[in-house]
View 1: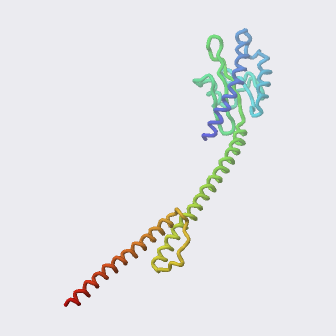
View 2: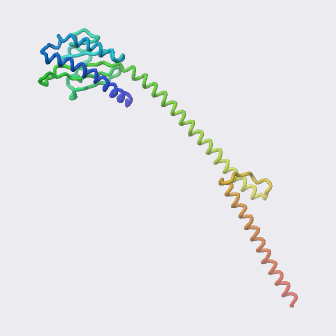
View 3: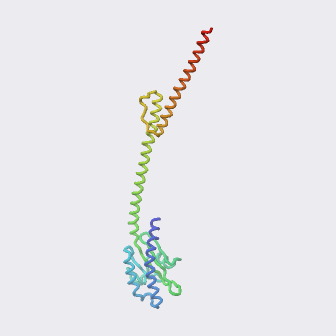
Length: 234
């Protein structure tokens, strides 16, 4: 719906140019006192304007009763087939108006004479089939971008799992090796990783343990010497 609204606004801006050129010719005839139905050059201008865009189905000029005065496709004098379009064309508060329905976009300009009285409206019927071609292209592009973004983040998650969980596995192995005392099977760790820091902490712990054992042995040795000295004195 947002895409349809956006495209309708864009196309309406382009169709306003056609409406303005037709308004100029119609009002010129009105200022010369030529009845609107007798302005023969208007039909030629409408045919040329229709050829500017292949998606323009028809261009009509209607009077205050909704009857078609000039048309590129319809017989003059017949009422415009869509009453909702007539209401929008003649009752709209804006000089330039548009109406978007399922298959067509209607756009036009209200016509006023030299006394600022409403005399009719230009009605341009635009086939919205071209919208769906653009929409399909945009949809395909969005699909491609979605797949690319999904694959990109999937790769990041895979790398995180591989390296992150690999580091956790190394930490578990280090704990097992340290618990079993199998120093020769210490797993290979990457420098700067969490497992490397953990291995350094284990190494520091071992050194502190050895130092504490040595201190305890030294204290125990002093205690034994002291006991031996006391025994010899007795």
